[in-house]
Image (cartoon, rainbow, N blue to C red; front, side, top):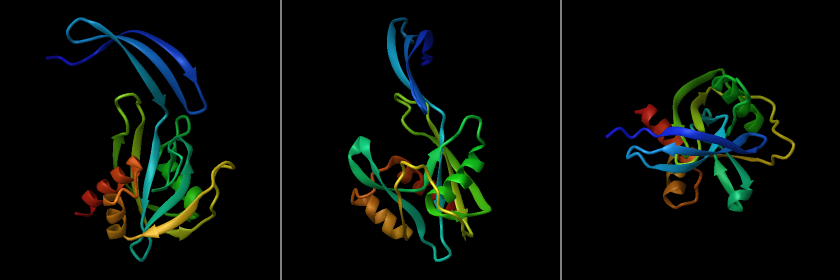
Length: 177
């Protein structure tokens, strides 16, 4: 069966700072119609940054949608037409205060394809150097370091909930094999 859904009608219902929301009418494979609400997102990057002593850099920050402080790998959204590698290098320094010229692409993941078109590009950074920690004026971040074993234990205990972090760690482990 051909599973493709043809878009019949599209209406933008929200336009925000870094995403829009559209309501679509679609033709289903069986000939019926349905609606889809879709979040359009510019995309993002995430970085697995490993120190000389084999610890992974994490950022700790409050996330209002879940009302929790979360542990996450450094990440950020792409600016319009921004190269993902350049964005990863920028976000690494802004969020952690480290730079690297030794950055490798790990892969990309559709984060929540049931309702959003965001694609996250993952990178691995090593040979870190001290840079200048920056960030957005409304962004408050603590930087932490953990071994891969500690990270996997925190994931298994439900202490790390962030999907980009769990995806990035898995891509990193695959790359290390």
